[in-house]
Image 1 (cartoon, helix red, strand yellow):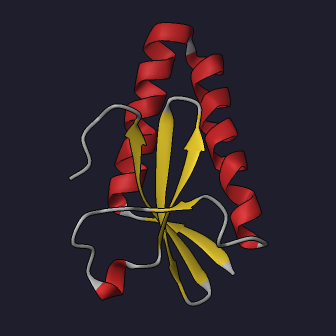
Image 2 (spheres, helix red, strand yellow):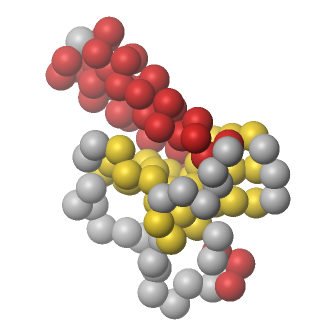
Length: 97
């Protein structure tokens, strides 16, 4: 198994890093990004960890979405065979779209 990041997830990491650097300083911002990525590493051994993403009217091909909480964020990932694709990182409280 391997972890891949969607373009949206990469943009989310950049946004979180920028916010962290501006508010807590570069070291703390980078440390938080590393913490987020550490949260994802157990997915390699336990791809079903987290909870099912409960979108209304979820199509059958999206039934494999999972949510991993980390602090004030929800990391949305998709299990696709031997690949765990990180789709987006949503701040808690933001509406799901």
